[in-house]
Amino acid sequence: MMSKFKVMHSCGHEVAHAFAGPEPARRQREEWLGKRPCQVCWRNEQAGAAMAQSQEWNLPPLEGSEEDKAWAQVIRAKAIAHNRDYHKKLTSSKGLNQDEELRAAIVSAADAALHEVEGQVEAKWWIEHRFDALNYIREKTAKAIAPIMGVEE
Ligand SMILES: [Zn+2]
Image (cartoon, rainbow, N blue to C red):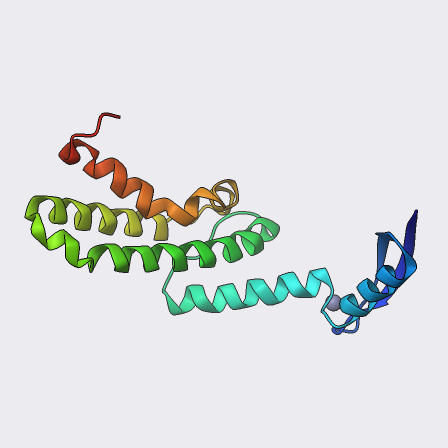
């Protein structure tokens, strides 16, 4: 049976919740929820942190509706962190020094992909690509070096 209850969140907002399950589990859930901010405040916190990160990285402002932009901001911050990390690992990989042509191709493809993804300002694009944007550089680079590696697409 679904039971409904109200929770006073840590942010001071009272929000209605529903729970299906035994009473002790419901009480545990209520207690857990009470220690957290409500969903709206939690999202705003995340968007604020993502916004600060974007400014630190000098990313361009996003375009779209306010609602889309807030969500896209969070997705972008996570994806850019992931891609920057991958870019760094890829371009500093020692194994690549063996083959100059391959190394040059990888570095130029990875640089171009990072530039491209960081320049993406459409909030809708980030929302649509929220999963594959994480591996943007990896996929672009793999495609770019496929002809050198002799891989058929
Ligand atoms: Zn709240």
